[in-house]
Image (tube, rainbow, N blue to C red):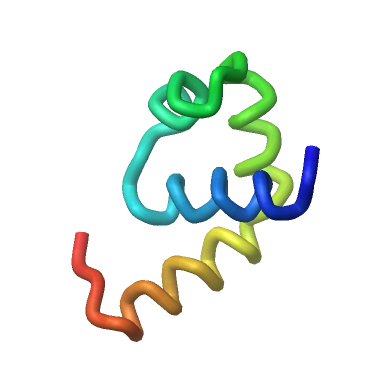
Length: 58
């Protein structure tokens, strides 16, 4: 899987989507999406921090 696609999955999770929702949108099974999210906690945190810095609110 490309780094860009991993980034988009992490970004979707950071914005509040569930792994199941992301999997449905991406056309993937839920398990691999959960693995990507669990394998990239730093990336998810970094994206979320950037979003908050830019004024995004949950």
